[in-house]
Amino acid sequence: MSVASGRVVSVTSDATNGRMVRVRHASGYVSQYLHLSAFAAGIHAGVRVEQGQTIGRVGASGLATGPHLHYGLTKNGAFVNPLLEHRNMPPGDPVPASELGRFALEQEKALAIFSTSSSSTFPPTLAQ
Ligand SMILES: [Zn+2]
Image (cartoon, helix red, strand yellow):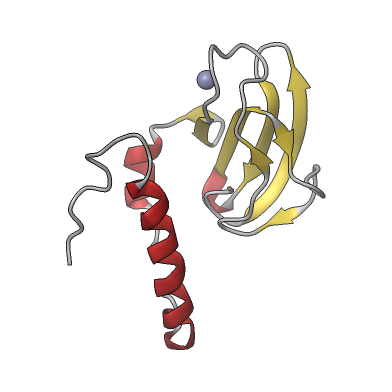
């Protein structure tokens, strides 16, 4: 899923990165997603994507020892630490009141998926 809205700059496939999608965002950021098993339908250079939109499926194409999402973020062409950069980004729009019910449902579904995954310590205690 794209981390933010933006425009797809490239959809490529090679022996190292495997299937890779790169998305340009505001403020000079480009996010990249490597080793995908498949591209989502309609994902090609120039297409606009929204935050959370599926752009491909996790896989192990290219030089990967197992399936994982290899995520990278650059700002003005230089790789940056996503964990630090994401902290400095403006927050997304709040969920509109009219969508709060649907949001709670999706949140519940997602947490149910996490709680049935292999790690028994996930999810961590949620702050209220
Ligand atoms: Zn990787």
